[in-house]
Structures are given as C-alpha cells and as structure tokens.
Amino acid sequence: MPEQQHYHGDDGWAKVAEYLDAISADRILLVTGNRMYCASGAEQALEPILSNKEVTHLSCCHTNPRVEDITALLDQIDHKESYQAIIAVGGGSVIDAAKLMKAFWSNPLSLDDYLGCEDHSDLLPAPLPLIAMPSTAGSGSEATRFAVVYKNKEKYSVEHDELLPTFSVVIPSLLKSVPSHTAAASGMDALCQGIESYWSIHSTDESRQLAKGAIELAWNWIESAVIDHDPVALEHMAEASHLAGRAINITKTTAPHAVSYPMTSHFGITHGHAVGLLTARFLDFNQKVTEEDCLDNRGVDWVKGRLREISCKLGASETEEASDSLLAKMRNLGLATTLPALGIKTQDDVEIIIQNGFDPARVKNNPRAVSESALRKTME
Ligand SMILES: [Fe+2]
Image (cartoon, rainbow, N blue to C red; front, top):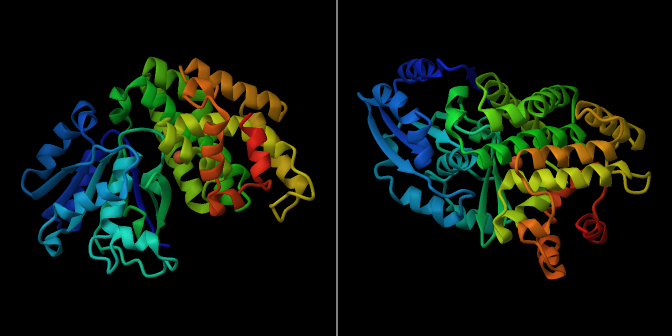
C-alpha cells in the first residue's frame, strides 16, 4: 500500500505550501465545501499559498455525494491532463468527492458504469497527488483508501490503494467554527469507527492500537469540543478522527455502519448520529455472541475480551453499562437516542432499514453474525 505523508498542527498551511513546491504543482484542482470553507478560515489561509498557481475551485455542497454529483463535478474539468494536484478541504463528503474525482478522472468506465459491474479490479485512479485537509473531526477520510457514494439511495464504497490521500494535513483550528450538531455527529462517527474497528474480525495489533487511541481521545474530549469549543479538546478530537480513519483503513467498519446507511439515505439522519445510536445497540448484540454465530476465527472468548476492553474505555465494567453510557453521552451532546425521534416511527420504516441494511461485506466484518430477524430485534 502507498505510504502517506501526514502532518498535524495549526501551522499545517506552511507544510501545504512546501509540499506543492516540492511536487512543482502549479495547476491545481481545489475541492471544498461551501459555507464552512470560508467560515473555518481555510479560504483566507489558502489564498496566499495558491495566489501564484492556476486553480480551478469547485464547491461540493452535497453531504453524502451521489453519483450524479460526482459526474457533474467531473464535467466541469477541462484539459484534465494539465492538472498536477488535487487539494480537498472539508468534511468527509468533500474529501470523498475529491477521491472519487481522482478515481474517475480518466478511468475507462464512468462511476455509474463502474458501480453497475461485478468486477471492480480495473479502476485506474489518476496519478495526481491528493492533499486532504479535514475541516470536521469525524470520518477520518483523509486517512483511508475508501470513498462513499450513493446511487439511488444505496450506498457504495469505492476502494483503491491509490485513493489514500498522498498528504493528509490535520489543522485542529479549522474545527472551531463547526456547528454543534455537525460536531456532535462527526465526533460520534470518530468514536464509533474506533469501537467498530476494535471489535472487527479483521483487527490486528496495529489497528487495535490506533482504535484504542481514537476511542479514548473521543470519549474523553467530545463534550468539551462540541459544547465549549475548547481548543485542547478540538485538537484531541482531530487526532481521534485521524486515528479512527487509520484503524478502519486496516479493518473496515462493521454492522453499525452497514445499517446506518439506509437511515441516512431514506430518513436523512446524519451519518455519525445514526452510527452512534446503532453502536450502542450492537454493543449489547455482540456481547451475546455464541460459538454458533461467532464470525471471528479467534473465538467467542476473544470477542468478549475485546468487548470488555471497549466497555472499560467507556468507563463501564460491562457492555450493557457501556451501551447506556454511550446513549447518555449522545443525549449530553444534544443527539436524540430513540428511533421515533429520528423519524423511524412505524414497522414499515424499520423494514426499509432492514431491507437495505445488509451490506454483505460490512455485516461479515462484525464479530457476531447478523441475521434479518436479529436485526429486526436490535431495531425494536
Ligand atoms: Fe463513518
């Protein structure tokens, strides 16, 4: 897998300038969000760095980008061969949009056609350096080789080693102006990506070390980051998000993420909010793992041992208590914790999630097998 250069610190702008000089990039595609790009101070900081470059600036205003959004962005690029770098500044959706643009810059198949075919081996991302600068603490997308895209409300993950950003620059002060609800949901995404990576059947010593750091930092600092905008807490949340990204880059996510996507696409629930609610439920679900439904080759005792460690990191002695603590944390952050409060009110609503919540690849990463009836019970 390609190595990534990484920098964390409020003086990251100078590092971006040095990097652009080092790769002699004069023709640049800049992909950003809309309001936050200006409000975070990123626009002001980048302007002098890019003043002597030829820059095409595209705004990706879509949270959870769809195939047509990426296609529309790509259609705005002329003379693709003249570009020397892509810079993405924004939340996970913006960084994912930049990755998808790089992936389908000159790929023989369009994104739409690619998602429609079975064999995904022939993706040819453009050999363009990608500089990713997150302006929220949550997805850790700057540290992964995946990008999420929606087609007809269905979630797809496009994956390639070359989609790992070549340079990730985490500037904690960018997080200061993130609205509270976005910060709370993003922070829950970082925390839960850490938890899911920790219990994933693909966890390794390295991934668990990364996930442990993410869980501990996010658990301890999320409230002061979201509620008080405390600079030290923002710094720790930025680190938590990045560590969680690196952890899931090894393990991928598991059942809560798989089930969360239809909650987002069909009911408009913010990604991290849905993931938080589901992680609390899957803590209880996974604790009941048996020899018959254990998917981790290391066995039931191994899985339960990891769940105990997760609970401990959440300040609890057992998973039930950890699950309650997680929900209490969400309420403290102003995030509703019941399905009806999020618009999932009828059995038909629950069925929409169940019918669309079985991404086979993601559910298979969960330490306990998830059947349709088990999921129905988990959603009660
Ligand atoms: Fe996530």
